[in-house]
Length: 534
Image (cartoon, rainbow, N blue to C red):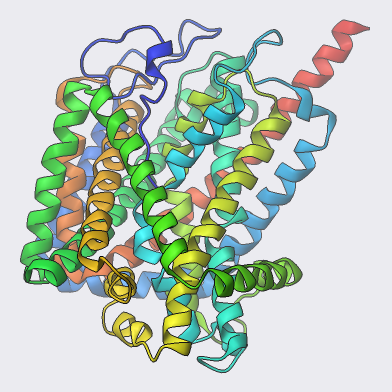
């Protein structure tokens, strides 16, 4: 995932240098842009982050032991909550879309969408397209082919191929975007219609009242900061692993922690500089360029790959996904499979939760004037279709290579999951060129996504200010890079996955409560409107 909050900034009033994205939006309420003061949320978040970094550096073995133990306890005890809560949110959104509340606009009643529907869809897709598509576009389907989920098929069989894509669709589909949609919907309603500051705590005014400005509200904002921080560091780590693997294949760069740290340091410098200088045109170019490169790579693979096989596999896999949707949505670990769920479904759900605040702010920014119904249908359906199609073309092609062309992509992936995408490209013409394009694509996603996250972290720790101080932007940019580095050195991908799962659980509860708070406010506002009409 990647995007930049400055998308469409040219339509908003100019903001001082230091605003990386032009995130400010017009609407009711002069107090929405916070004071920018560095209060308890900033200092608490900074202090705990510093303690975590020191812990990782000084007591690495202890950190790994604690996170592993916590991971096993959290997933064994509360893993079901990721399944139940995300499904409940999805059902809530579908109900909301087809209820009378679906006609309510995200803004004043007279507001209309700032962007055309096609432009809006393009912006949503710019948030969708990201490091995860390269990291897992081949890795997840080919891994499931070799080790089918929950033992539902024999390895490397046609049935396993269908199951492989079916579960990839589940991990990257409706539930993921339900998390983003409920967050974006609540933020858009709160900021555009109610005129509140862009803070997660402000979404709980219907439940907590003035207490959102006290310790409870501060605790919610701190949890939002940490969820966003670790979601970003996970993406940074995955990006570094992908770039390192690609450079190793092309030019023999050592695939080790030293190379990965250097890559993270270089990219951190770039996105921090971008966030500080507010070079929105440059990031806009990166976002547009990455989308074009992704489309070009997609079309290339569709042309040179087994298109007919992929199309047939797509239809069958979507049918299997639709048939088994509720079973997958509630399939836990009562009879085993915990390790598989930790590596795949629980990790993916936790990753989506950790990105909720950032993507929610982005979706809210571009959706003023849209109806609740239009917002929900657009955010749920379009990105899911994009993910399904990408995974089918790249993952399905890799499956064809292994099953019918004596390929060893699954074997290479088992040895190093970050080799999957490049191993697939190696089987087709112009492999060196397409590998370079894939590396450039990852770096573009890397920079634009981390830049936007740095801005959101700074905003959330600056009382919701849309123009956080330059020093705060630098601090969160550096801290994000440092956290990614210490986690990579502490245990690589496993450490990143373990940490994002453990730290996301409290925020999952917050998202569930957020949905309740939003529904309560909708009911109260609708009742008030009816009373006024009478």
